[in-house]
Image (tube, rainbow, N blue to C red; front, side):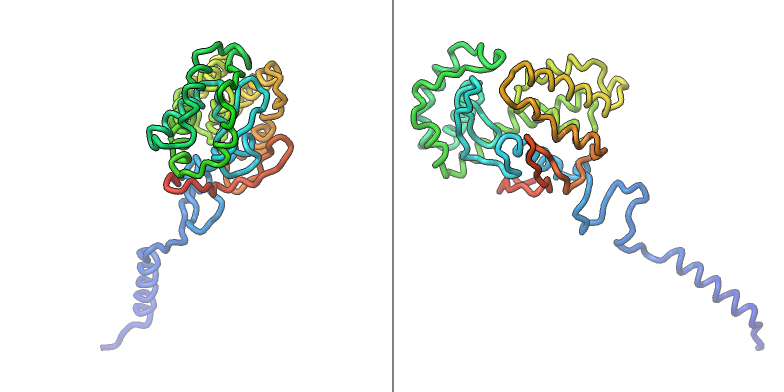
Length: 287
């Protein structure tokens, strides 16, 4: 039978179109909205991954310890009327959370080198807390040797206790506050967390109330964050503890438009620049 050459061309074209249409998609195709990034891309919005927490902790760590890694053995009397500041986020012997941490550590390891300070910490806790803008007790009676013992405590359970209380007292409440006001951007969440660490959850909630209409109520989130930063600027100046430029890095990120905290990025803490990459060494707590 004689075959029409035009029929052959038509069939060939038809098979080609079918093959292209139903060809399996490779791993190199990404969503058109760029909501996800390829697994080998080092830059990605931290809000879309568990990396967000690491990024947020790194930012505050630069403000607390001038390092992107947490300093679990840090201890110093800063003279800020909060007693001795110590640990990965600046727990304080004069603001209750220091004693809460040591007691939790003692639950994990009753035979530890810091348990002996609990009676002194209890006494401080029962005393007045009318210093540091009504937040602290500067007393350090009975804490001789505390700084040295924190510096030399190499027990992994001490680190575990700090991460536990970081989550319970600061990070989780900060995320709950962010959710309650409808904050979606990682930068807003990071700022709220840093306020919780620096001022405590109660005073952070007071600042939130003073900021007025929230993103959940219709305010643009970036405009709202600007208001929060302005209110906190005023609070830091009022306290007068020489950290009035603590908001500098958050302002620069907001102005740059990196509200998703896409890593790596530069974060400025008290005039020093740090690269935030989300690579935080939390051992078994690594997200």
